[in-house]
Image (tube, helix red, strand yellow):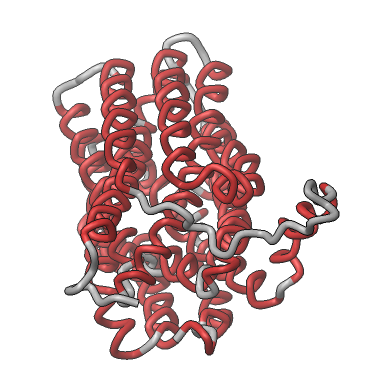
Length: 404
């Protein structure tokens, strides 16, 4: 294993390519999220109905994720992301145009967007884990910091679009085309053979029975450590996802702030996650995965409570700052933990991501339902229970002995 200083040029190029993949996916997702309040108003949706629309992205991802491990193992991360970038462009562009005609075309576009997002997510995390091993240092949180940089850029671009009264359709179409183009160029530097040891071929059975492949795909679902990591990631994905989907709506509706202020609160949340992910590797090196993740879960909980019970908008901004920092490392470190054994990285990352994305499947309708009854702001208290669970489950992410 080489160090970061002595890494060969191909690894350094792949490192830049992984950053590009993370940044672009973050930019595309937050570009959509930044315009959620305007889409909500344009379609005349209640919080509950908005939650059902947002469910489309998670539904697409949940369909995609169980297949993603095998797709990446067969086609590789580069070709998978190249294909998914085109699908993401079609999906986001379809939602941007469909917003002018009704809920159904938006739902279809967001479903395609979510499907592309799921396979893309697994692909870039598998490649990121490979680069992390080649560099010999924990850089996965910084890749996810790159994702957060992309989300901040998308949020700030969205805030500018709102301030300038730019049409939702035009803004999102430009973002869709730009995201696909940058991704296709960026992933060309990805490393090959990122899925571990190839399956041996038995001479008498040149074509192994399909049941054996199914058994391989299902194997991680029978591993207690993988499942516990998945539940931990679910809790932190719910923490992150509810912030992305609902912070701006809650600030606008429940704090009575202007639309631009709500979008800026969303940008603060994403900026806090970026800072946490960028400086997180130093904390992980010094204190280890488990203590850092437990402490950050407590920070996220304090920020959430401040956001929910704060008496004025400045308290909301302080709350999202702590909330974002506290939730920053859960998903990336969970992906690293799932990929500790390189020979089984792709199926385990796919399994953990599949479990984690259930948060995005259940989160939007749950918060929307609660928003109809107790306001979105107070509905966010549902996150607190999962953060408490994350504190308990953090021990499952302890590195495997052979991994370090």
